[in-house]
Image (cartoon, rainbow, N blue to C red):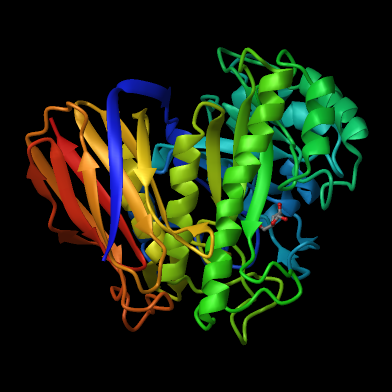
Length: 490
Ligand code: AHR
């Protein structure tokens, strides 16, 4: 049994963990929106305004703070006017990014904004820069948020929505270095400034504008962008990074059938996020020393080959205990970097990539990744505390990650042990925190390939485990391939 120690410094509060770090992303891609979140009002599947009630309830349980929509690559092909007004009159388009299927626009602005209201989360809209116009995006903002007398606000009212919505998060384009227009950072920076100038604040709504940042380790993009886009132009810059187990996009590997080597490749590939966050933060600290611009990881997760027999353009993949480990590593890293990281959005919510929910007809299941969000949810809005973790490594790759936060007099310690064979004993030193009670929940499985199927939907789920509180210390076991959430009540 490996010995792991975690020393907590309760008096050292480092940063606030923004709720939005636990955010999600839903694109018009495969079965994420249609036949996933949205089944339509006439569906026999229980729904509210066409959205599955079981999905609404599940997302509320993990306190979804923010939902990004409509893409992804789809966003730079999306024209918002296609998705308003009488549904039967909405134009049919081709979803050119994702399988060339027909997009009938049944789910549009009203449906999305009402879904966010239902979920109690912030909407995060990605605007079309790649194939749209400045006026189109500016009009969309006015349509959604203006309270007064204007043709666009009246049109919204005629379409059934009297009061304007509040829209905080507005992305100006998506991956404009790639599917969003193949731009150079110099060019995008200018285009960004033009677009954002005309996205205005109406009727007490204040936009929080997000510029398209780099793909993974493209530090040049971040530098050029921030040399040109200043804090008075933008509130945040995005960054996308996906874990590919093999490191090779042409053969990524399968979601539930993989070698131990691919498993450890997933762990080390996920830990790359640490380097990305550190180096991008360094550039941001240099060019924005007052820390006004946030970093938003608005696409992250594991990306595998699609499940056999499914549409290659739909990016449907199962989700195993391995994904829970990857999610825990990333979320612990986002917490640790929450001085700069203000939001993160898992790709994607339902039936696409590293989903928290999968559906099949009327059936729905919660993935191991969902359970990690559940175990980590008390970090939302908490204060990150300084801590020192002494774990162990395998061939130079750290196997244990963790983070500690405090909220309402209660500590939450989340720890993952990625090693496939080594159990560990964790000793937490509470550094003077007056603890009265400790309780822990454990997510693990005998095999990292274990997943929840529609036949066996609760194979991987968290269970209570023992945590012994004694004289300012807590001890508990971290089994191989596990994620633990320890709550200590003061
Ligand atoms: O999440 C799937 C796709 O990955 C998104 O549409 C795009 O932004 C990224 O390349």
